[in-house]
Image 1 (cartoon, rainbow, N blue to C red):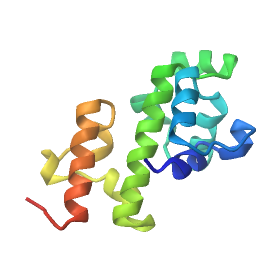
Image 2: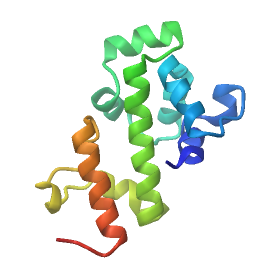
Image 3: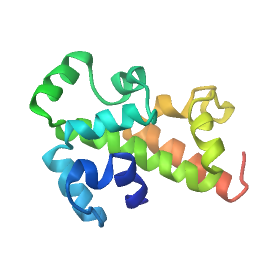
Length: 141
């Protein structure tokens, strides 16, 4: 996993108030629930729009509750990290300039769905990761 890229996209030391340096440490943070500030960082940095957050991570009602408690649920934390992990993989395969547009463009190999639309489930995420792996190896069928 591209842990450092994910941690950076979550706000890094400014949000976590410590260095998060291992996958296991990130898993433990997800289990405990990410700080709400990590979600706000993702929004501020334009990694995800609020509309995308409300489709992929949480609902508006939960957003309001999480903001008050300053902590995401384990499930919301997992969904956010899942997206950032796939995004980091896409950046690795496609490059910084191409990855985000690719995630948001209809893809004929995904029945014209946008890859980002499939990241709300484990099986959809697997499909997107498999496609990125195929792209990395030049296999497009």
